[in-house]
Image (tube, rainbow, N blue to C red):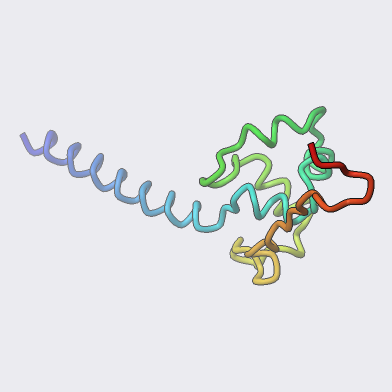
Length: 114
């Protein structure tokens, strides 16, 4: 009977430790927007990571962290200057600049009203 309780306690303790490790790990991860901001555009990021097409980057989650392999490659090989020793993103890279979209000029010369 005691061995069964020991196994249950051991399993639950491992789950708690794994959950704590995951939350600490995900705090270090960066979002898709932050990764794109490091290189300026999706095609440049895809080329730096060695992807053949940019569509692999577009498949990442919009809100969650990027996959582990690209994160490790960015952190340790490509842009170690953008990360602190503990893996967090430095302040200047933490918040990407806002995207400015240009509106089409409706009053452009040569445009006629229909």
